[in-house]
Image 1 (cartoon, helix red, strand yellow):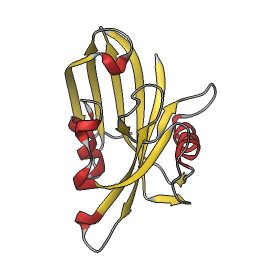
Image 2 (tube, helix red, strand yellow):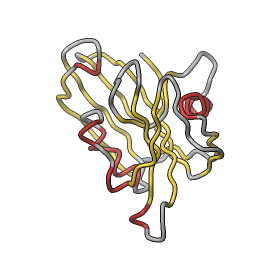
Image 3 (cartoon, one colour):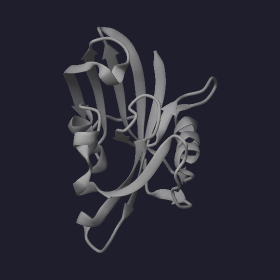
Length: 164
């Protein structure tokens, strides 16, 4: 099973709470190419999930994140077999400006305008809650074989307000 992370940096884009923005990336290669998501990736040997989220965010978009808050644990099954376990973080603490890399094109997007139609099918079920400050544990079932981004999303279970 793959252990991975996602990180969602947040900032206030104006005077109203409705002006909050989240940093998303448009993937330029690999799993989910052309889709939007948060920066993140696979954990390396000996690396904690938090260390992975920090490293991947800096590698993909050049942003130095800190004070990460654990927001979710997502388990993905493919054809009934464990495929990926993803640790989800959010933060308002970061330094630098996001920049384009070989892997990602970063964009600050208003939280109310997240392009769920250009994201994984399951994201609409859990990401709005995470962006509102909730915590979540979820299991998502896909069928149709590798690669995962071509498999069909078939079912899920969610638990909100989980302690990590």
